Length: 239
Image 1 (cartoon, helix red, strand yellow):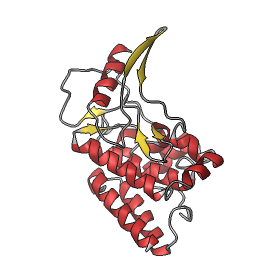
Image 2: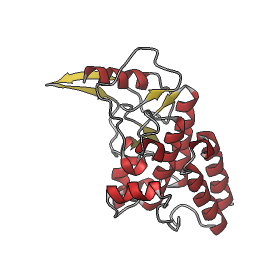
Image 3: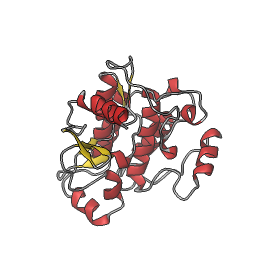
Image 4: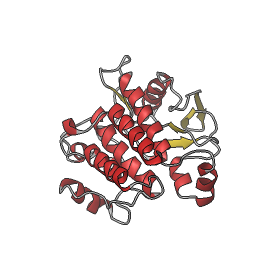
């Protein structure tokens, strides 16, 4: 437990970006080590997506949906640029500020692209992951660690979650989800009406997500490419 907390705090402390919540430190509470960060009154993005009143409040502050996706892609671009893979991108690990801005949290699954500055080892050989956001190369055991490319896969699924307000493959069991991923069966395409008005831009967004979910990790776009594509889609749809 101590190693895991030290690993998470170390990775988190390396980050200095508006899209990554600051780590303040840690406290010992009973038998648990708890990492401390600033209070986020709105809670996680997943909570906001599931709470109509909270979402309505946030929509009054900003162009909802596309803007959050751009922020998230920008945050991952930053992390990957400093050599950190988040390892567990999903709406549950994103908090929402009062202004509606998003920030990544939970670096318990983070890895360093070029190796650790400090020598941390996992206490378990099993790799933590969230099935509905996990790339096929992790699910089938080809990769034994999270990568930039697996982050991009999860980013695509999180964008889908933002668009629909539901987890990817909603209504399906975890076993069915794994089967669908291995058989290249994509999640149901939403209408994107809450994010984009132009049909051509909706098609571009869906095609961008398909690229994020490529079975071959090398074919997935970078976080910067996702961010730039989202900016173009947003600008074209509001022109």
